[in-house]
Structure formats: C-alpha cells, structure tokens
Length: 94
Image (cartoon, rainbow, N blue to C red; front, side, top):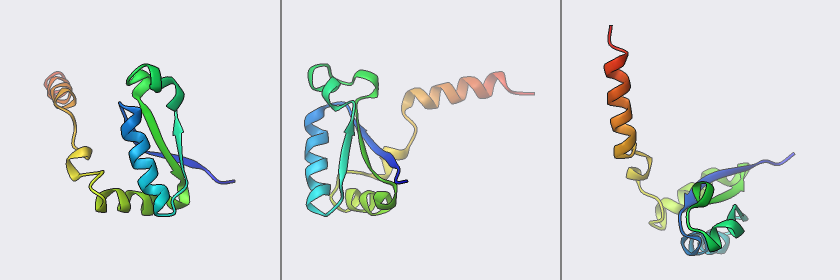
C-alpha cells in the first residue's frame, strides 16, 4: 500500500498552492492535509501540510531545494526550541 508523507507545512494556503503547482509541473503528485481548514483560518492545526507519495519524497525535497522553496536553515531549530533545549539541559545537569 502506498503511503503519503508530509514534507513541508505552510502557514498560508497561497504558499502551499504555489509550491504544489511547482512540484506538480515537475511530475510529483501532491496533496494538502488541512488545506480547506487553513483557507479561512491561517495556520490552524500547524498549517497546510504538503504531502507526497513516500516513493517520491526524496525527489520532491530535492526539487524544493533546487527551486528555492526549501533551505538548510528550514531544518534548524527555532529560537523557541533552542531556549527550551537550554532550559531542559539546565535541569538535567548532574
């Protein structure tokens, strides 16, 4: 059975639509989880999730990098996560 995987999320559905169109023009079949919900309310439940078939995920990610829709810094922890990590490491000291 084929499986869908989420490769990116968007707080604005217009950004999702643009990237979806780009990937589909490159032959990648795309789906949007929570797409309808986020058309009226921005970033509800984590935004619109861009999903592709698992077998096409690597190619889709490669295309997103090549098209400028994904950057290395997108994988870095947010400032909030860095703060949480600092606080947790403080409390976990021996």
